Amino acid sequence: MREGSLEAPVRHPLDWHSPWFWDEAALNKEMERVFDICHGCRRCFNLCDSFPTLFDLVDNSATGELDGVDKADYAKVEAGCTLCDMCFMTKCPYVPPHEWALDFPHLMLRYRAVKAKKDGIDLVTRQLAETDRNGALATMTSSVANWATDTANSFARGILERRAGIHHGARLPRYADETFLIRSAREDATPVETAPAFGKRKAVLYATCFVNFNNTGIGSAARKVLALNGVETEVIHPACCGMPKLELGDIAAVAESARQVSTALLPWVDKGYDVIALTPSCALMLKFEWPLIVPESPDVKRLARATFDLSEYVVDIAKKEGLAPVLQPIDGGITVHLACHSRAQNMGAKAAEMLRLVPATRVAVVERCSGHGGIWGARTENFETAVKVGKPAAQAALRNDTAHVASECPLAADHLLQVMEIEAGEGKPTPRRADHPIELFARAYGWEG
Image (cartoon, rainbow, N blue to C red):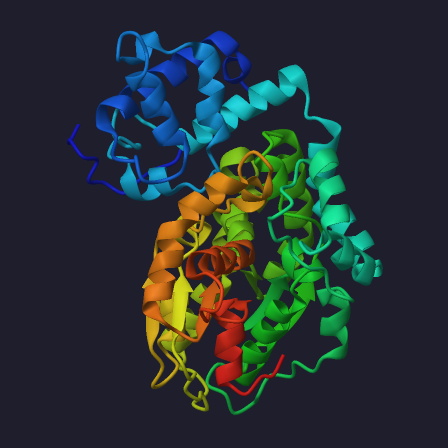
């Protein structure tokens, strides 16, 4: 064993088919072991709310050690975890292959899974995780859905807070008037034959729930950029990747999503297509989480090897074939927030690397957490904490003083912009919208959305 775990982190498959995984006594024993190590280390004090909560519980206990903490309070530590993976990827010196083998996010996932199996998942929370169904319904009635979820609609948002536990002040994603699947069918994405990558690449875009039902512009911008660089594209959305259900501990449902989506995508891989996931959480699921949840599936492993994050793919084209040379500068500069699930893919700061390919454009980077964490930050009990956690990132973005702010995670981008507006106060300018980096990159190519 080498202190500090200088080797690359290694993640072990989730042993969720084993009776041991579901044994509450074994779970409490493992949580006690991990929490005691975390208490002695405390490197993660400035990440999510889980660690300050744990350290406060210990420090305020009768003994000042973990043995003075009531095991019932372990739930408070779990409640602060957004499964962002930053403790595992960037902070913890005791992740595998270190013999202590800490994987804090997957331990919190195990806790949620055991709790969900024992107590069930309440009806409202379960329905909120049905993103495909909800998105399909909302796009058919987008004007009503967007009116009802607007923060200015105090009546409807009050009902949503009481019935669904969604904070009245949290901005929620707007729904598109049509799905990305429909939009992509009517938009021209013919690859440019003179482009460097023409004839060398073709890609199938996994639309993801958010791009398919909410911001279809992300997908349209991606196809524009890829077409200008000679890449043939197709678009499919067989089903959600399962991330919302992973956050609830419904591992069986995630396994089913992995099987369903991989069955739909692999025929494209067999025809020589690369797979591009249009949002980082979904890319993380396909590339890393699914192989750990269904490690017995060769199809899931094969799909993982064929999957790219969107920014990662554009940068790969730039390095191997070169980009179409018609990019124009973006005035006012860009603050790009590196989303946690982009960083968790361990691929480098690809969004910033991609935007720096735009000539004569200032690109400033923010690596702090936005505080959102999927639906976590929109919940009534978490919204104020989400704003608090996002303040350092928002303050850094304000100091950068750029005309544009972007994040590969659309939810993080919108939340970051909201916290920036809170921090700036009335009358002080902030960017008028939050973008995905590919949208800004496409605009540098002349795309108007």
